[in-house]
Length: 301
Image 1 (cartoon, rainbow, N blue to C red):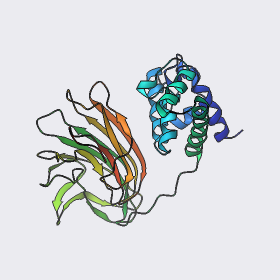
Image 2: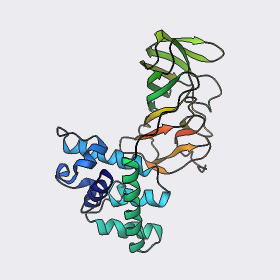
Image 3: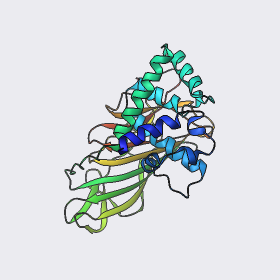
Image 4: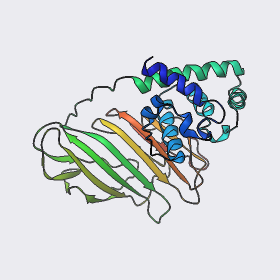
């Protein structure tokens, strides 16, 4: 047995019954799936559910739309498909896709095989950043339930050459005409060199990591195409986006995943608190990643 075969078997076992909502979830998640999702022996059931769901959503995001939808329904991750039996979720998906249940079962099996491949394949060799650094983690929180919207970013970068002193910063609000207010919360000094630049507290050596945080406050979001979209200039290993709309939240947002800025992808639900969360891995420079939401009377592309 190998990791791929073990993971396929464990995923097929987990999809039975209530899926990720199963009682005694800790007993339903096998050792290979635990390792894939970062589940530890000390995790409580709610933490296990969250970790497994987040990882499956992340992996399913790399699949074609039909396999992605089948995956989210099969494991009861889709909030509209949280039926107590797997066969009920298959039937629901078949009706929604206008397909025979046997076709949906085959697609779920196909999706599980792809998920296992993606989860067990060796990581890609990091691409060297053209400016001598790369982002290993970027965590961004968008807050829209205040008088002014704001984004708080937490970055972790690694230098790929000795003597790295400055980093060019990119606003997460490219559609806003006037430059947003920017404030460094920690990790450097903001300077202007024909564009915002972060000056390091001290030069970095090759391989050295550095953490910093920035707060952006635009006067208003562009009403024609609201969203939070990143087009990285450097390679980025992980982008995590969180957003809070507050009481006037849409029912869902649209992902932008490795495409041009104006093109939307799949629907992503907004929860009862008016919040969303999503992750992107191995971002490529020049491509867009993020989220958009629909303006009343308009249609997402």
